[in-house]
Image (cartoon, rainbow, N blue to C red):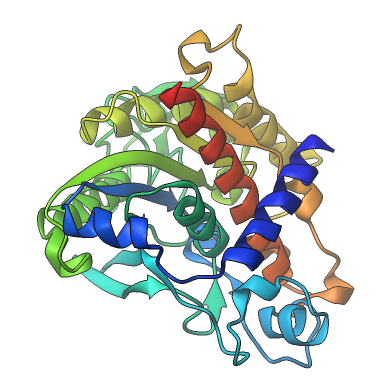
Amino acid sequence: MKRFTMALCLMAALVLTGYGVSAAKQDSAESKKPVKVFILLGQSNMVGMGEVGPETTQGTLEYLTKTAKKYPHLLDEKGQWAVRNDVRYTFVMQNRGNMQTVQNDWLSVRGKTIGPELTFGQIMGQTLEEQVLILKTCIGNRSLGWDLLPPGSERFTFEGKTYAGYKDDTLSWVEGEEKKPVAWYAGKQYDDDTANAKKVLSELDKYYPGAQKYEIAGFVWWQGHKDQNAAHASRYEQNLVSLIKNLRKDFNAPKAPFVLAVGCGNPGRASFGLQIAEAQLAMNDAKKHPEFAGNVLCVESRDFWKSKETSPNPKQDYHYFRNAETYLEVGNALGLAMAKLLKQKSE
């Protein structure tokens, strides 16, 4: 109830204040304060699978805003998608061995789909006086137990098989039998995504015009569907702890807040989906992970699940039936969680 009330208050503030850049923020840009950077990672649902249109289809963004009259702050006075001119959104993705810039513009609704960055970015823009860069680096169909496996992860045995450690080129094998290497390795996507984020930051002015300095203000994670098998689900909590520590180390941001949402691409109420959800929520357990108390927060997102009858694509449960409202609400929850951690950090 308290979280819901906070969300309502924040949304009311967004509606009242609009999307124009305040004088304070314009001054901060002129004084060259470091841009606050939030790095978003995950798999396809972080990439963004919430359908924007058409307006006649339930669950699309156009239906929600123009027919159901929800989320009025997403539209400007002319009924067009509002633009937040103090929040930059850059989305890069690995494509055939090279970094592809999918989007690099001021935060708004662009293209055919949205992800959680839309509402997350709005909340960060409303929360912080400094300029904000939402830097998303991810691609779909990736698991934490293989593609995104953090550096330093060791091999493990599960039900008679050995599973890959970082840099191994075979997913799993039986000891004593011939391995079957693939043209990939455990952690390849982790390496690509972090390298791409660093490339963007090394050319900051190209992605945030006029910016000269930056500060890693936080990390955001939304992932889980690809790990729904017995072996990877059994290691999810351990791998997630390693991910958090490695990202902070790789970006020299040991105190940067880290937020994540329960993310399985389905309800996550049973079987491996439930196991992964519980592993993600375990980050909130100060007894199990005392080092994360007050600086890591997992938000419950399973209540944002929408029915296939009220969604654009009833066949894609792994993409939350492509219902835009799920992506908006996950972004809201992540934004509120990050705002909370930032406030605690400043006190």
